[in-house]
Length: 91
Image (tube, rainbow, N blue to C red; front, side):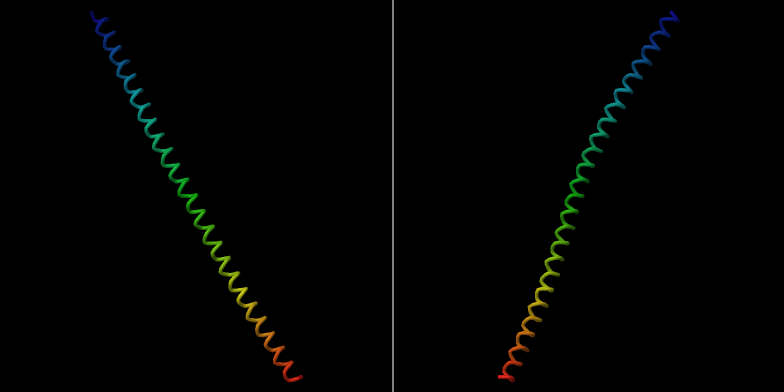
């Protein structure tokens, strides 16, 4: 009788341990799924940040090019006016 009780208790312990192992595996899978989802969101945000930084660099480059173009245009216009005024005095 004692052997049967001990055997039943051991079977119950094994069953409980198996149930705990299944529950922990399910919990680990849930954590893994959440981790994967968070990693995907993070990657998406990183790509969005990279695109935003690239857009800012392009906008800065365009603004700088406009400033240079304006300076060159003004300088050319001033040089042309000076040449024309110089010609008037010599004509």
